Image 1: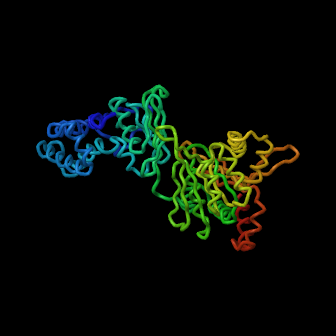
Image 2 (image 1 turned 135 degrees about the horizontal axis):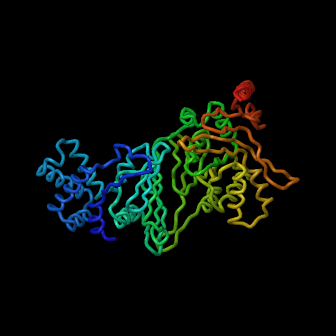
Image 3 (image 1 turned 90 degrees about the vertical axis):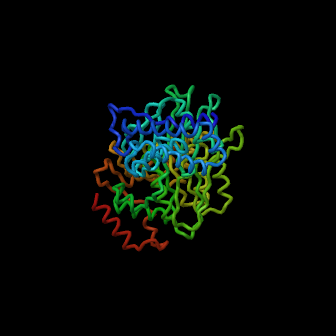
Amino acid sequence: MSLLERVSNAQQTYSTHDAPGHKEARSNDRMSDASLERFEELRSGVGSHLSSSDMGALITRNPLQARNEITQVCKRVCEERPWLAPTNRERDILINRYLDSVFGLGPLEELLADERITEIMVNGSDALFYEADGVLYRSKNCFKNDSEVNALIDRIISPLGRRIDETSPMVNARLKQGHRVNAIIPPLSLDGPILTIRKFREQFFSLEDMRDLGSFDNDVLTFLRWAVQRRRNIAVSGGTGSGKTTLLNALSACIPPTERIITIEDSAELRFTTHPHVIRLEARPKNIEGFGEVTIKDLVINALRMRPDRIVVGECRGSEALDMLQAMNTGHDGSLTTLHANAPKEAISRLTTMVRYGVDLPVEVIELQIAEALDLVVQTNRDPAGKRYITEIVGYSYNAAEKRCETKSYFKRAFWHDQGTWIAFPSWLDTLPEFALATEEEVERWKQRASSAA
C-alpha cells in the first residue's frame, strides 16, 4: 500500500458502534457522534488547505516538519470554524486525534496511552475490544472498512521490515515500545483482518507489589525469594494472561547483583531496573526473503557459551525445552522460565511434548530429565473477575518403579478469596542457614507460621 493511500485512509479512521451484550466502554474511550462530526469537519477542512498527495509528499520528505505544518493547518481550520472546538482544551484533543489518525495508530492511540489497558484486539473493521484491569470491554471507536485496518497493520509492521499479504497472511512483531503485535488477514482469517496487541507494561511489579495486590501472602513471598536465592530451578506455569511473565520478572529481581543473568525471549518483555549485570537476547523471525531466523533454541545453546550464572527464558514453547532442561541439569542452577499449562501435572506432558519436537527420546527419559531439572513449578491463574494469583507450588520427583515424573504439592490455593494451605515443605529449606540466607530460627518460625495459617 502506497503512502498516499495510507494517508487517505488514515484521514477517515474513526467510526462508532454500539456494544450490545458486552461491557460498555469507559467514557474516556468514547468518541461521541458530535465528536465524530467535528472530527470529520476538521478532516474536510484540512483537506481544503492540504491535499492528500501534498500531505503524503510532505510526510515522506520530512515527517517532523510535516507534523508541525499539519498542526498549524489544523489550528487554522479551528480558527475559521470556531464551533469545532470552543475551548483550547477541546481544540487540542481534536487536533491530537486527527494527528493520531495520520501519524499514529488512529483509534488505538488512546488505548495504547491508557496504562490500565493490557490487551487491544481489532476484530475486523467494526469490532474493537480491549482488556483493562483484567476485564474485557468493547470500544465505541472502530474502523470504517477493512482497508483501513489493513492500512493500520501495514503502518505498524512496515518500519519493522515485515510484510503481510495473501502469500504471507500472518505476522508477529514487536513495536519499539515493547508491545507485542500479531496480525492475521484473509484467507486465514475469515472475518477480515485481525490485529492483537499485548501491551508492554512500563511499570515493574516486585514480589511485594504482587503480594499487596493479593496474588499471594507474605509467607509465599518469603518462600519464593528463598527459592531464587537458593538457586532453585523454577518454572512458572499458567494459562494466557495469568501473570506468568509478571511473576517471572518479579522472581528475577531477587537474583543477587553479583550474578550474571542472560535473558532469552521471543519478544522482549522482562525488565531489570536495578540489576547491574544483565544480557538480554531476543529471537529473530525470518526476514521478507525467508532467511535470517534465530530461534529461542539457538539462543539457549549460545547462552551456555556466555558464562551465565542464571539463564532466564521468557517462555519455553518448543524444542528449546530440552536445551533448557539440560542447562538446569549441568550446573546452571537457579534458571527460570515460563510455560503454558493449566496444572503442574499438565506441565509434565507439555514439556515432554516440547522436547520431542526436537528429539525423539523415550517418554521415561524425558520425564527423568524433568524431575531432575525442575525444583519448583509455580502455577498461576486468572479468575473470571480478572484477579491473578498463585494456585499451587509443587516439586517434581521421579518414580523409578513406574518410570514417570510425579508431583509433590507444597502449597495450594483454590480460589482468590482463599488464604491457601501449606501441605509440605521442601527439604532444601533446611539448607538455607548453610548459605547464610536465613538462620535456623527464621526458617523454623516461617514453618510454624505457614503451618498455623493452614
